Length: 249
Image (cartoon, rainbow, N blue to C red; front, side, top):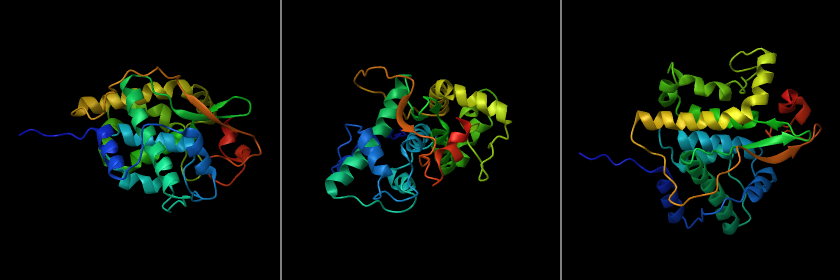
């Protein structure tokens, strides 16, 4: 009996076509602007966290359909679109970024969307929190990687930047170790994600789509958001940047 494994990019494209949503262009500027607007629910993910979340969804051990993960982007509440055109544009950008992530990984050239403070320090913590949230959607399915002696270490640079509900290091790392990882994360994370995707491919039929058209090799990271020390933190906590994620910068 032949088993048909869903191609993730093809699945996303089919669902978008069913709702007449264009997914051929990623408009990160428009997406970021909408996520920061009053029409986006207050607990919506910001751009960097959203990118980490989409990456975890895209490369994970199981195909998760948009009907399950889209509501989590908005914090469980519905966004207020100005009209059908804006709704299609925003949803199209989300799905296009999902597919772009798959193509970048297939080319061994992932470009995560991190953000920076005004001193130029790259901050990856928001991105890693989004990736962890994607893992939690299929925690049992991710267990083989967590328990793998050879490949489990691929998760370390990502999880080491995540915090528990009290704001402490999720892995219980001392501050000096955490500071070193913060500095190195923008370089390590793309390679770790590519390694994680390869791990899941080895565990079963290939599910990640290969890009049919050659694309220019992206830089190791997108730096798209600049935040001042006294500005609201992009993570959506409501606190100032210097009192939230900026404490590690």
